[in-house]
Every structure is written in structure tokens, then in C-alpha cells.
Image (cartoon, rainbow, N blue to C red):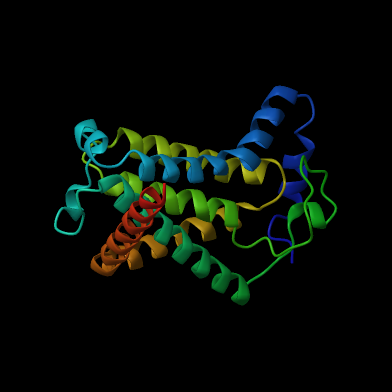
Length: 210
């Protein structure tokens, strides 16, 4: 099944003559997703007083968050990403089509043969962006996250590894994932607290050995 048709052929034919834009789109399609583990690690390592003083707070979650706000946020976002990826995988079992590069289009990127629907990269970046946008008093970081997620979605189409319908499906999967995690946020925060306590015990034991 080809969800793009003749218009997609014209779109990819228009890539020639824009080398700088092509390079930027390839970078966005492949590399921007790596900002997410870096950000989660930053949130985990800079929790406590630094996070409290930064003014970045999750107002909707005040009853559930511990004083280790950065770590709690990191766990919440991570769980949202995992749940969204599971939803994305299930969606792909009910509907599938080959990626543009698999059906003869001249694309900027070629990957292993796979079901193109929905885009896993886009699912991940939007599953990261929704919590950042909705759960903070200050929306600037959330708007930046949504902007970068949108750029990833557009770039995945531009370089030829997905169709627009794959991006729409990914956004839907991430929204549903965020909604489900938010609905059970108390349990997620209990899990976050467990992770924090476990880390504290491990660090205490390590320093005793040293």
C-alpha cells in the first residue's frame, strides 16, 4: 500500500538543489531524538535544590511529587515514552505500509525494511514534549519541546522514511500515552519515589564501602 501516490513522487523529486536544507533535515530526522536521554539524565542529576530554585515546577503534580522534583519528572517522562511506544507498536499491528524508500522513491535516507506506520522516532519526541509542555508553569520549555518534536516529524517525512499519516499516527499514540500515564500519575509517582529510594540506598552502600 502506498499512502502517498503521485504527489509524494513530486515531493521527493524536489529535494535536489537544496543541500543545506537536506543536511539540516537529515540531522533533525536522525539526531534530535538523542536530546531526550540527555535531558532525562540532566533532570535526574540536577534534582533537589537546583531544580527548586530554577522556577521550573510541575504545578499539576504538587501532591505527588517529592522534593526530588527532577528525578520524579525524569521518571514520569520516561514512563510516558515507554507507554506511548507500546501503543505505537499495537497501532502498527492493525495498519501497516512500507516506507517511501521501500517503494522506489528517491529519498535522502534509506533504512532497513520495516512497517512505516506509525513513526517511532516521532512517537518518542512527542511523548517527551507533552509532559514538558503541560506539566510546567512556564511554557517556554514546553513550546521549545513541541517545536523540536514537530521538526522531527516534518524531517522524517522530508528525508523519505515516513509519510505524513505515519506522523499523525505517532502524535496520536503519544497523546494517548500521555493521557493514560496522567490518569495513573499517583502510581507513576510511587514508582518514581521507589527509584529514588533505591538509588539512595545504593549510593549509601557504595560510600560505606569507600
